[in-house]
Image (cartoon, rainbow, N blue to C red; front, side, top):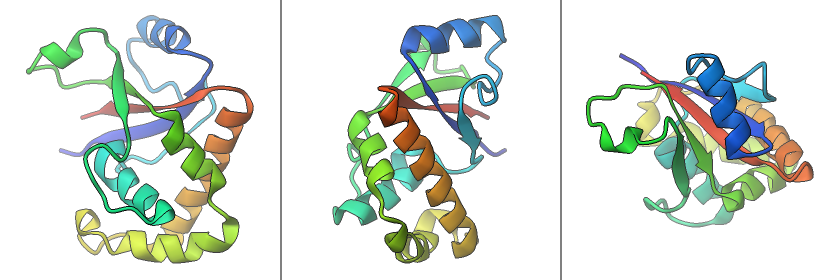
Length: 152
């Protein structure tokens, strides 16, 4: 069983919750500006490239994310999604600030992380970093946060 993950930007948590409540938790990409990445989750795989971009070692708090939907799901150990987390604005800004000239080097390093089990294509990860960076820049420009929609 895999995890589906989409990243998107939104004006605030209230708008995200309203949309998800009205659409049975379906991915908000399309209603909100976003990208579907399917297997790059915030806490480890995304945090690893953020660590590379900032010359910091990976740690559990490198990307600070907070569950925002559904309310109370963090207390239900049997809940299997979907759920949405908001990422800290510092992570958004790191992604937005990645210089295009650094993307090939970062993607090459990122492709080698243990979590990708040697299956990640550096060329694809270059596209991912470009898309995520552009999404993060648009979010920052509009005073919005980045969100991750996830489902098993």
